[in-house]
Amino acid sequence: MKIAMIGTGYVGLVSGVCLSDFGHEVICVDRDPGKIARLRAGEVPIYEPGLEALMARNVAAGRLSFTGDLAAAVEGAEAVFIAVGTPTRRGDGHADLTYVMTAAQDIARALTGYAVVVTKSTVPVGTNRAVAETIRAANPAAAFDVASNPEFLREGAAIDDFMRPDRVVVGVESDRAREVMAGIYRPLFLRDFPIVYTDLESAEMIKYAANAFLATKITFINEIAALCERVGADVKSVARGIGLDGRIGAKFLHAGPGYGGSCFPKDTRALARIGQDHAVPMQIVETVIQVNEAVKRRMIDKISDLCGGSVNGRVVAVLGVTFKPNTDDMREAPSLTIVPALVGAGATVRVVDPQGLREGAALLPGVTWAEDPYTAATGADCLVILTEWNEFRALDLGRIATLMANPRMADLRNVYNRDTAQAAGFTGYEAVGR
Ligand code: UDX
Image 1 (cartoon, rainbow, N blue to C red):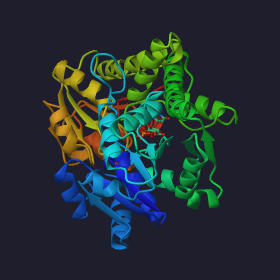
Image 2 (cartoon, rainbow, N blue to C red; image 1 turned 135 degrees about the vertical axis):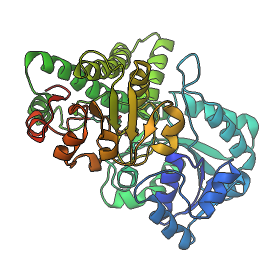
Image 3 (cartoon, protein in one colour; image 1 turned 180 degrees about the vertical axis):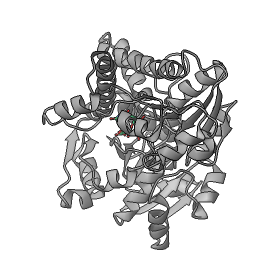
């Protein structure tokens, strides 16, 4: 099948590359000529394990190409995916649909034969219908259907998530569109991955509900963690004890410094707005948003307490600033709240991150970037583990403790434990919820 993918951001690029790997002919489109030039040169603008090799393989096979020419890509395509950004709109928390609607208009003018226009971007309920109206208004003669096909990719595991999904959700309203979508995902269907067909609104809702539920689950365990600390319980044991109940499930119960990233913060805010607009306040989600902010602030207090009540004049070494490991993404990372607060309180902050420097340099003013954890820790008063990169999981803690001026650790991802830290020579150790 011939597929056009509009937008080569995270979702668009991963989806385009994976769909070409299914054997489809995929043309990825972006308005940014610099980005297209880099992609054509085989350069992947984001850090995602496995993506570069998969891209190269499909380009070499002649199934995957990149262009700035939307009309050429759309011509003859059976499906046109919209995978442009939907950032939070300034001021009101709504998803900004400018890019989606501009893409819809451009596609409308480029349509030649029947095509399904598929929205992959996360969009508020009702957007697919609005996309259909926009296309119809821009090109009344166009033969098309719309489909909603939300993505559930995790950064750092995106290819595996695309190739081995828990489910594929497809909102469609005509048999013809359903057939096209079935053709696109046939390789998954043939391997028994479930495909859930729904109406457009339900598909749109599934995406928000899934992300809000996951953000709630994380926030729930973070709140339980705070209580565990007070009552002397261990949140890791509690998470395991509840997670083995099949109705609860073991995943997404890691207590930490609060969720971040490109999806959960944006989508919870958007869902809260949608609820307000329809006079059905999403009270749980609104509370989750507030509690997550409080979780991040609680981490700042934890570090200060560990440093004897204030970080003023202290040297703090922060390991990991991306919102999670295996990504270079800094969007809404807890580090963006925690690190500036430390700097503002008078700490000298050194930062180490395997991928964070490129984006983080501008976002975290006033810090110094160290090459490795040992350099960062030398002479430091507190070591903070903020993102659980694998290379921070097997540190020579004894060596670090000797290098530090005051061997104290705020282990905000529960990578180590008190006994290990003390045995290595740390005089202070704080984790989350234990
Ligand atoms: C998420 C969803 O998982 C994905 O389905 C959706 O399409 C996009 O948003 P992603 O943002 O890549 O994916 O990251 P994810 O691995 O889900 O983690 C999100 C945040 O939650 C991170 O900040 C992570 O550190 C935090 N988290 C996750 C926890 O604090 N505890 C957990 O148990 C799990």
